[in-house]
Length: 149
Image (cartoon, rainbow, N blue to C red; front, side):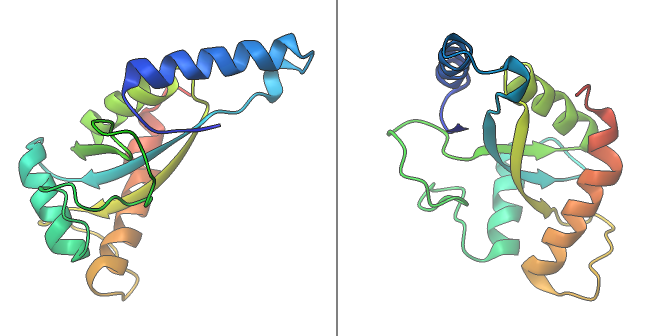
Protein backbone atom coordinates (compact mmCIF):
# COMPACT_ATOMS: atom_id res chain seq x y z
CA UNK A 1 0.00 0.00 0.00
CA UNK A 2 1.27 3.46 -0.85
CA UNK A 3 -0.28 6.14 1.32
CA UNK A 4 -0.71 9.87 0.91
CA UNK A 5 -2.75 12.10 3.15
CA UNK A 6 -3.11 13.32 6.68
CA UNK A 7 -1.48 11.28 9.45
CA UNK A 8 -4.74 10.25 11.13
CA UNK A 9 -6.30 9.13 7.84
CA UNK A 10 -3.32 7.13 6.64
CA UNK A 11 -2.85 5.52 10.05
CA UNK A 12 -6.46 4.30 9.98
CA UNK A 13 -6.02 2.93 6.46
CA UNK A 14 -2.72 1.20 7.24
CA UNK A 15 -4.27 -0.54 10.24
CA UNK A 16 -7.37 -1.56 8.25
CA UNK A 17 -5.25 -2.96 5.41
CA UNK A 18 -3.08 -4.86 7.87
CA UNK A 19 -6.15 -6.39 9.53
CA UNK A 20 -7.48 -7.49 6.13
CA UNK A 21 -4.06 -8.88 5.26
CA UNK A 22 -3.90 -10.97 8.41
CA UNK A 23 -7.61 -11.97 8.22
CA UNK A 24 -6.85 -13.42 4.79
CA UNK A 25 -4.31 -15.72 6.45
CA UNK A 26 -1.23 -13.95 5.20
CA UNK A 27 1.84 -13.75 7.49
CA UNK A 28 1.92 -10.47 9.46
CA UNK A 29 5.68 -10.13 8.89
CA UNK A 30 5.11 -9.99 5.11
CA UNK A 31 2.80 -6.95 5.29
CA UNK A 32 4.29 -3.81 3.76
CA UNK A 33 3.02 -0.26 3.88
CA UNK A 34 4.89 2.48 2.06
CA UNK A 35 4.67 6.21 2.71
CA UNK A 36 5.97 8.88 0.36
CA UNK A 37 8.01 11.83 1.68
CA UNK A 38 9.79 14.84 0.25
CA UNK A 39 12.67 15.73 2.56
CA UNK A 40 14.59 19.01 2.64
CA UNK A 41 17.66 18.72 4.86
CA UNK A 42 18.54 22.14 6.27
CA UNK A 43 20.57 23.73 9.01
CA UNK A 44 17.35 25.31 10.34
CA UNK A 45 13.78 24.27 11.18
CA UNK A 46 11.92 27.08 9.36
CA UNK A 47 9.43 25.26 7.10
CA UNK A 48 8.53 28.32 5.01
CA UNK A 49 12.21 29.00 4.36
CA UNK A 50 12.74 25.30 3.53
CA UNK A 51 9.89 25.38 1.01
CA UNK A 52 11.41 28.45 -0.66
CA UNK A 53 14.84 26.76 -0.76
CA UNK A 54 13.33 23.62 -2.30
CA UNK A 55 11.59 25.72 -4.94
CA UNK A 56 14.80 27.61 -5.76
CA UNK A 57 16.91 24.44 -5.91
CA UNK A 58 14.51 22.27 -7.91
CA UNK A 59 13.31 25.06 -10.15
CA UNK A 60 10.01 23.26 -10.63
CA UNK A 61 8.27 22.33 -7.37
CA UNK A 62 6.53 25.46 -6.17
CA UNK A 63 6.00 24.41 -2.57
CA UNK A 64 4.85 27.87 -1.50
CA UNK A 65 1.79 27.65 -3.73
CA UNK A 66 1.35 23.85 -3.79
CA UNK A 67 0.87 23.79 -7.55
CA UNK A 68 2.93 20.67 -8.09
CA UNK A 69 3.98 17.69 -6.00
CA UNK A 70 7.04 15.49 -6.18
CA UNK A 71 4.98 12.36 -6.86
CA UNK A 72 2.47 13.86 -9.29
CA UNK A 73 -0.12 12.04 -7.20
CA UNK A 74 -3.81 12.82 -7.51
CA UNK A 75 -4.99 13.15 -3.94
CA UNK A 76 -7.99 14.61 -2.12
CA UNK A 77 -7.99 18.38 -1.61
CA UNK A 78 -6.38 19.37 1.64
CA UNK A 79 -4.23 16.28 2.01
CA UNK A 80 -0.45 16.27 1.93
CA UNK A 81 0.38 14.29 -1.22
CA UNK A 82 4.03 14.10 -0.33
CA UNK A 83 4.79 14.26 3.34
CA UNK A 84 6.88 17.46 3.19
CA UNK A 85 9.50 17.46 5.92
CA UNK A 86 12.08 20.15 6.39
CA UNK A 87 14.69 20.66 9.06
CA UNK A 88 17.87 19.49 10.69
CA UNK A 89 18.77 15.80 10.60
CA UNK A 90 17.68 15.38 14.23
CA UNK A 91 14.29 17.01 13.62
CA UNK A 92 13.78 15.00 10.44
CA UNK A 93 14.59 11.71 12.17
CA UNK A 94 12.07 12.49 14.91
CA UNK A 95 9.36 13.47 12.42
CA UNK A 96 9.96 10.42 10.24
CA UNK A 97 9.78 8.16 13.28
CA UNK A 98 6.50 9.74 14.44
CA UNK A 99 4.81 10.33 11.09
CA UNK A 100 5.91 7.21 9.24
CA UNK A 101 7.09 4.30 11.35
CA UNK A 102 5.09 4.95 14.52
CA UNK A 103 1.92 5.15 12.37
CA UNK A 104 2.43 1.60 11.12
CA UNK A 105 4.42 2.09 7.93
CA UNK A 106 7.46 -0.09 7.51
CA UNK A 107 8.82 1.37 4.29
CA UNK A 108 9.54 4.89 3.09
CA UNK A 109 9.87 6.28 -0.43
CA UNK A 110 11.78 9.57 -0.39
CA UNK A 111 12.99 12.35 -2.55
CA UNK A 112 15.72 14.47 -1.02
CA UNK A 113 17.03 17.98 -1.35
CA UNK A 114 19.94 19.31 0.64
CA UNK A 115 19.04 22.90 1.47
CA UNK A 116 21.18 25.94 0.89
CA UNK A 117 24.25 26.50 3.04
CA UNK A 118 24.60 22.76 3.70
CA UNK A 119 27.99 21.30 2.90
CA UNK A 120 27.39 18.29 0.65
CA UNK A 121 29.21 15.95 -1.68
CA UNK A 122 27.45 16.50 -5.01
CA UNK A 123 29.45 13.89 -6.89
CA UNK A 124 30.27 16.60 -9.41
CA UNK A 125 26.61 17.31 -10.25
CA UNK A 126 25.27 20.86 -10.31
CA UNK A 127 21.81 22.16 -9.41
CA UNK A 128 19.03 19.86 -8.29
CA UNK A 129 20.87 16.60 -9.15
CA UNK A 130 23.75 17.63 -6.88
CA UNK A 131 21.44 18.70 -4.06
CA UNK A 132 19.45 15.45 -4.46
CA UNK A 133 22.56 13.27 -4.32
CA UNK A 134 23.96 15.29 -1.43
CA UNK A 135 20.62 15.02 0.38
CA UNK A 136 20.53 11.26 -0.14
CA UNK A 137 24.02 10.94 1.33
CA UNK A 138 23.11 13.12 4.33
CA UNK A 139 19.97 11.03 4.86
CA UNK A 140 21.99 7.81 4.90
CA UNK A 141 24.78 9.18 7.09
CA UNK A 142 22.96 11.47 9.52
CA UNK A 143 19.25 10.57 9.62
CA UNK A 144 18.99 6.79 9.18
CA UNK A 145 21.22 6.05 12.19
CA UNK A 146 18.81 8.08 14.37
CA UNK A 147 15.71 6.09 13.35
CA UNK A 148 14.46 3.39 15.71
CA UNK A 149 13.43 1.03 12.89
